[in-house]
Length: 512
Image (tube, helix red, strand yellow):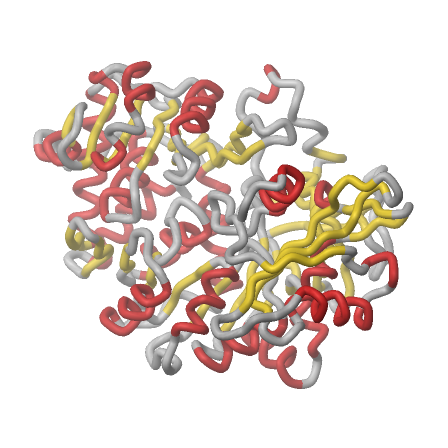
């Protein structure tokens, strides 16, 4: 099974039914497949060859989905660029992957000047009014007849970039098999089966990240997808009401903002998924009460496409009533993967004992692009299993508990402390919204545990109250030595709280 086959199958089955609605219009399933095929022909007509890497810089829109599908149909390798990263990071990615072309939105004309200069106008395609070949013109002048380009499930279809331990971007290779297996697992493990008639998915977060994992499941099911770009909580709630949205997925920070902004639970919402980080129990309860009780958490990585584990709707219900420990779990391991917790030698540890999470299976990357030319990637695989860098333990019938990231561990007074446990204690203080905990250099302790936190609207929580609560809730070696109230917590490009940036600001004394 390949993405191209899924596109043509959806076009044949669902015809003129709306497939995607965005700021640039509406596309039916047949029209979407036709435009993607025409664009694929146009890209190959520019001199590109199957296997060439193509940068894509598009906001949430119909064009984003058209470009994604066109690249797969043409046998080209999609390299999505996160708009939040900026030109310097884009250029590093372009250099690492040896990019041959750029598909971009005209709003990024100024920011892409260096990229376009390196690639040349002949290899640049623009959505809107900007330098390069016009996307709509390229579509209009090419045929929509099916391409003869063959593809196998193990052909490379994309590169997903994240920063390595040195800060240099590293591109996890993604094949058709990776993406299709993830789509099937999202359908059956997260959604609980193909979306029912009347389902509508909302891309409220960037569709090049976690929200994009739902693109293929809803395409296969014949259900429409709505694209929002840079939406705040109020606009998301308005879109849910306007389009009768039934499904969406967000990072935990945005889920909590949505819960605070909602006057009443949206009646159409059948499922709210979240990923990227666990949510404190108080946030989960607030989301259940003010948004929907139909909550699902899933876990995965850039290198191992979600879902690897799922905390489903029933788990959330049990966790909010009889078994609160469930809410601290990442859920049960999905059938599509072999996930283990191992020691440093790669040997499985007993249930309940902590170690590194490793995984193999169809959603797992075959490796990093250019790995043979780089010496900064570390040991990514151990005995055939991907090393996730996450620390956790298994238990309770195959459920996974994640402790934290190996690289975020704080060593203070000879003890290992994972920030997440301390953050959960801080967020249990009444009036606290979010928290981040880091280790700062300390001549006595090695690292000093320091917490920063934000408050809910209308609340003013003093740091003394936070520290007092932590003294009662945590062992002595895990208690923060300092706590600072801030107006906001820095987020990384995928919308998660950046502990690295928190530590940098604290160490430099930079005003918040």
